[in-house]
Length: 327
Image: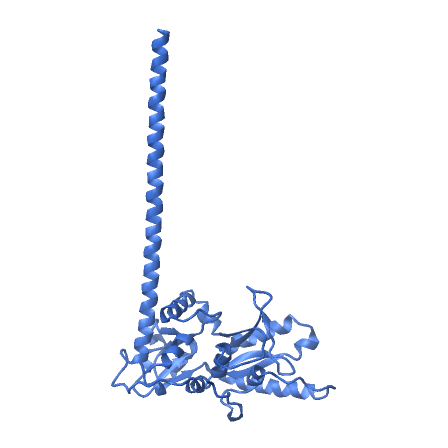
């Protein structure tokens, strides 16, 4: 009896071991299938995002090439860098200057050791930047801070290294904060456009908006913000409630790359900014004059501004502040 009972116990133990092994194999197989399904879902999501980016880029290209436009289009002709800068110079950007008209570099939140010059396309955002800088500095420094005005073309040329500057830091263009905060992944979409165009990613991206209903064979308006587009929509006699919710958007660097091809009659393209930004140009000039008057009573020679600083203190479109030829 003793031997028989011992043999039976061994058989039961062996059966239990086999069950555990089979259970472990089944669990491992289930985990592998789960990981494979998750990886497949990630790949599908990645493919869907890439498709969406390509569709957005194609939509923007259709706006530019006239496929979605109205009426016959003029023959395409590539623009030179100088011509592109001239077109961009029609609208202003804003940066921080000190009392000697030198650019004030701000600390990069991601790389604290890097100074950044921000050229803001939105007037309200530029004012907020100025007030924040004043609040963070002692009164003698804060009193000298003011906004400088740089034509967008020159700001773009400096940030893209088309023109040289002695500013020792990173130079970035920044669009309206309101557009970036909408939660529709504009930044991610613009990065996808840059990748699809075969360009290197930059430390900044600037969305440019366009609308089929506002374009025609003789004019292609491009807008620095959704608000600027909405203003033009209303000025054209349309109702704001009828403004399309979806507008084509393209990264400025991608657009500039396209402008150097013969894909479109680029002479019809012009850039439009918000009215408040245009009004801020006058305010910035008045602040510049006030700073100069306050500094005139101080002893000692003023520091010579760099090319970027001199450009920043100039108003967009001033005949005496044209950027140098770009090779």
